[in-house]
Length: 207
Image (tube, rainbow, N blue to C red; front, side, top):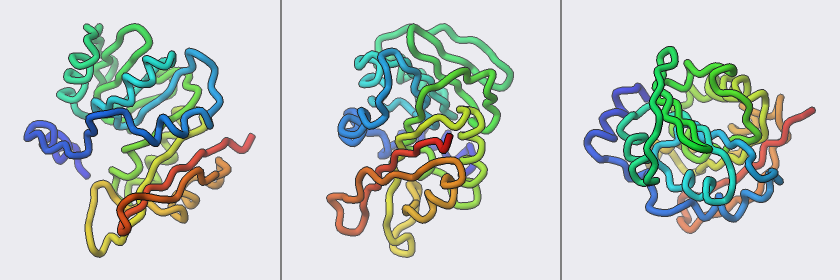
């Protein structure tokens, strides 16, 4: 999807993908990552997800990347935090204690900009991207995070019946994108909707 598509979604408030609570799947499976207190978690295409508030309240640092500045302004407003805003190349960096959000195109993000991360939580990025972009995204994500482990959530459904985003990304596609660098461990393969199931993966670096 082109940038204008997502900017328009936020401008017109067509944001059904935004949930009014922290994701129960995150809460259920996060301990699988076995992170120490104050670990730094990267959320690609983060929006204003309440998962960020949950991670901060659980004692972790958060770094995110998001295309829409509207989403990030609302994120900090809802967190009750006044950010420092800095221009870094093509990005605006919104920063406060334990949180850094890069507003711009994630494909322009570099390892020096991002800094060290201990894990990636990808709830909404891989499934938001069309098939012809996912391979480039997966390579870029692993590069900028130095192959950090991932908690990855995807959906699987018949895309001839309904279309995305979010798109259907079954286990076979996850393995295609990541198996050369990660052990792909399936944590959950279920869902309330018979026609659509949620998949949860722990991607463990092959080191």
